[in-house]
Length: 320
Image 1 (tube, helix red, strand yellow):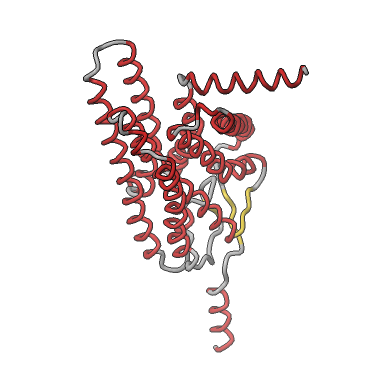
Image 2: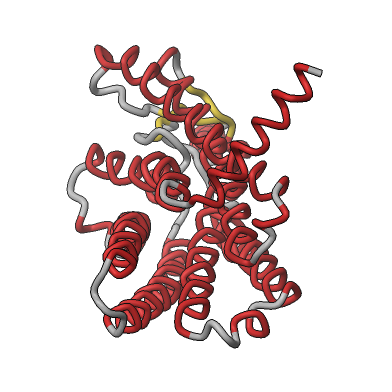
């Protein structure tokens, strides 16, 4: 009896050494197509955001608060997608295995960067509100130290918030199935595999998600509402139409980013299919990172001029 009891305890205390990310295993016939498409998308995200960073750093004209925030957003997007997409691409070619520590690290980095982006997007919306509604006071309100302080706060807040979540997750014990039905180590699919009680981690994540998603999104909506009110006071014309078009495109991408995160982290019960959950995750891991550089620079003549000027200088140096 003693030997049987010891054997039972030893089995119950076994811990999982690693996980397998199933990704889109339900549709293996599309894996090669997905690999090609997402490789192109990943390369586009990296190149597009790198061009923005190079343009901002190299051009003295772009050394303003708006472009400082935009360069930080681009750098964040590069890190953000690089945390998830390489492992997802690996899953299209072979079994994507990851250790428990590696899984928690991936979630920590990705979650921290996603949270930092939530705060940074709110800062950028507030910056545009001050620039449009208080142009005379704008240089004083958005001084270099204040801009740097807001960016540092956004980055540090992201890592502090998700550090608390991962600290709770690290206390969980994984001893059962080791297949994560997702293309990266997301919170809900990972917690569902825990053998120990995950309620503390779930409640902590829910509370932090409510605060870190609803508060910045509310500030963004408030900022754009005030911008639209200010724009409505301007006589109808090309500038007014351009302002409406720019605001609508910004809000569309921002709403997609916050909306999908809110659905998955605040109201996960609303998603009745794991495949739908993966599709939602693609919206904030792939779609918004590729559209952010486009909507912020597509009609931006200053960025275009900086890039053409840099290209012209490079060509001149090559010819010399």
